[in-house]
Length: 77
Image 1 (spheres, rainbow, N blue to C red):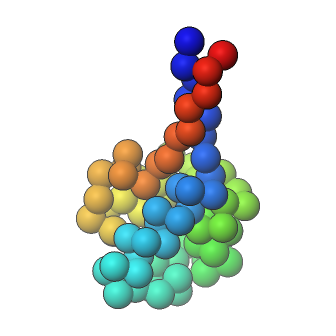
Image 2 (image 1 turned 135 degrees about the vertical axis):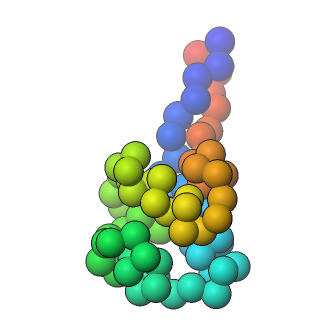
């Protein structure tokens, strides 16, 4: 059986990748989603979980599907 495990660090790296590819700073992205730069930095570093509402806003602003941001690892159990 294979189990999927949420990978917050890789999710944060995906957010940073799409943010940078759009020419945005962390401050720009924070302003666009109604959060502080500190929160965006923590999302990108995988330090805090991203609420579903924030994930939806991130995806909209970055013009991607939410599943393009989220990363899961798999493991055999």
